[in-house]
Image (tube, rainbow, N blue to C red; front, side):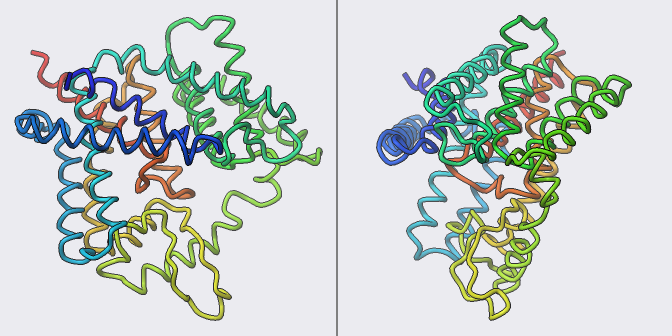
Length: 378
């Protein structure tokens, strides 16, 4: 029972974040699934304490446990009276436990079958969204997802896997590649340009083919800019990639400076702090839209630097180890690198029920365990 639950616990956890992003399930089905998953995990972990020694303390996953311990120490000394922070502490620990156990018990499934499952689910969401709302260029398109940036994330991941995988593509794969590309661009998310460009580098490297694709992209961009649309290309052309982010970064830096050493608390993982910042900001309160700044808003520079060091060190080690590429691991490597770049523009890394964030931590865990297996194959 326990092994079966944790084998597929991550799959449920991940795809439940999509339900959190659909208006008619976000306050009904999604919370029920989330809390059931949390409660069942706590019960199973409590009655199987040997799991801690065997898996959670495993060399591959110890970086996750280290972050959970830092969360606990921070909570005990600086955040003890905030219920929301306690909920974040528990949810992050349970999520990290589910990631570790799912990788350990179901390694082959995530190596070969999970990416295809991801593509199928994203395709269903996109097609269902098109049935309900086929007008993809009227405004920033979001389909059945309330947040267009969320739709951008899942379609970029599906697109990147189909492009990067080395096995032969079917006609359906080519159709989905085109569909995911169009939907991702129509969301108006400027970060998708980075994701799509990075996926082409993963596939073709710095080659003549990529130069041709780059020229084609410039022509496409000129065509899109000439039309009155809200695509990613239009928004980059009219607003640049930073634009409104500049003010958000300034406010985030002010928030960090206000509590430089101890931060504002674990519950401020979005980078949104409800404090007055002065007349120059006219009472503005908004998320940091930067994962690294959100980290320092949460923890301050001392604890924030510790966590930053832990996951950057792990990220660099797995990227360097798998730099030659692997047919089954390139997709997870792409997710790690893309997230580290995209976190400069969105509050990734720190979230709880966020698809991109959870997929990042899972990919980092999976690569860490893969590295351990390859190092000990002999």
